[in-house]
Image (cartoon, rainbow, N blue to C red):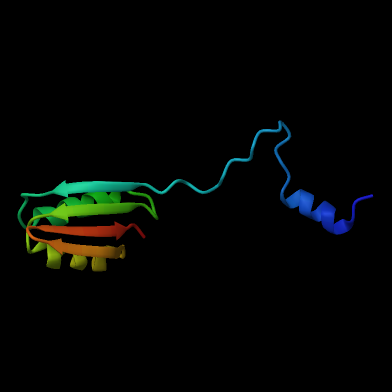
Length: 102
């Protein structure tokens, strides 16, 4: 006869009755790249805001800009939206922002 602890464990980790594997309750996290090269202020910030509204919490958005003012505008935008700037890089003529949707 199984112990009480084993019966409890089996209830927590039981398989569906049809024998199929249980589906995960975690949604996959997606990463979207937004190419905003050549756009000038305020378009990179506006398009970033619009793209963020389409993402689910936990999704990531990579924004590529050539406008130097985006280094000020996008962090300020994230301060308003509450999303997280995970990383940013400044390459010659290219600014890349990695954002996590809150």
